[in-house]
Length: 124
Image (cartoon, rainbow, N blue to C red; front, side, top):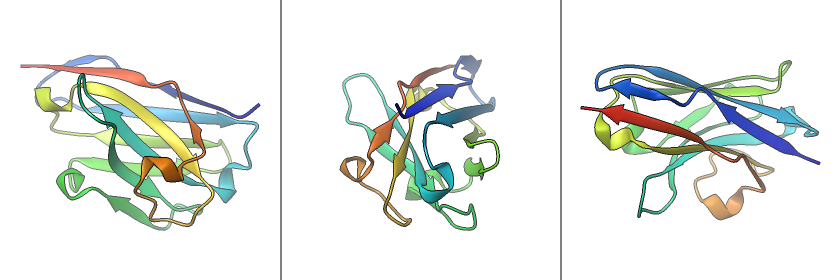
């Protein structure tokens, strides 16, 4: 059974940084585009960015360019999301997801596997 498990979410003050990680199991990890999404209370799940199978190409939502960086390690089957300059508006549950389509993959419906999410809370 494919599993994606996010970790690293916690409470941080505004202006701080966090690094989220997603570990995959039972997945041909290097064959998948990996994406990061987030969902704030009462809002839809939104695309943050994705990385292609090799890690050579990354794509970000326009509002995420700069403060957020996605990297992957195919040997360890992990994909990370580095977040800097956090604001209270970044408070949300953060999800990683896997897609068989080549990057860029923007729509949540184009992802086949999802993690359970990790909570990030940014205080002012």
